[in-house]
Image (cartoon, rainbow, N blue to C red; front, side, top):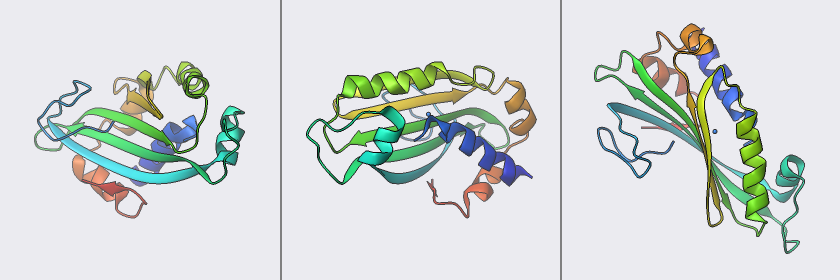
Length: 171
């Protein structure tokens, strides 16, 4: 049951198409997020220019071919010291563009997706453009009905177990 719930949450959060990487437990990172007991799972992928076009209706500026974007999906959890209670949960998707695109148009596409995010499930959704990299960070609202139903009793061990047979690498 819990595995199905976690998979459902991953799928919902991935509907952005392709929404927090942090440094270390008990430390602050460059996003000023502090963790008590951090657990993070990461999956990497590549998107072709056709996949980018399907989503954004934008072509590369120079008509280049091949992989267009390296994508990193990060699921970042913060638990209490014992790992019994989930304190925060972030979906972070990083798009590192290989081909040249109009990055302002790409950012606008992802900002529009953020504006359409489920306000009942997510507390926030932010898009940052840094040169040829777009980072989308979405925080799950743990007080939402969905989170209360599916995440209220999730422990660190549950999350570790749920990611055991997935393409994510966790630490």
